[in-house]
Image 1 (cartoon, rainbow, N blue to C red):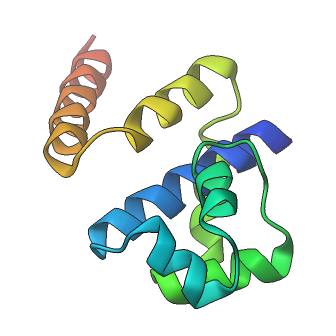
Image 2 (image 1 turned 120 degrees about the horizontal axis):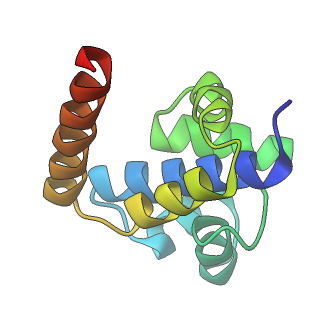
Length: 113
């Protein structure tokens, strides 16, 4: 079963990641979807979970699929996985890619064990 905190963590991760990949400020995003910059900050840090219509606007402006939220949420079912998502959302692109490589190495080791 998907937990609310997992969904919130997945959404906050996607918002920040996509906004940064589009070189958009929180203020620019806020204007595009009709929210305050403070509200965007709260969405990105996981304090707020967006309402459905806000999520639809975010997905349109930031170019992600709603299914991405569900897929990420499935993998954030435990507290440690939520912590990983929170760490990832504060990383730059290079750090995320390095983390991905490390996880791939660990996964291969586990598969070969």
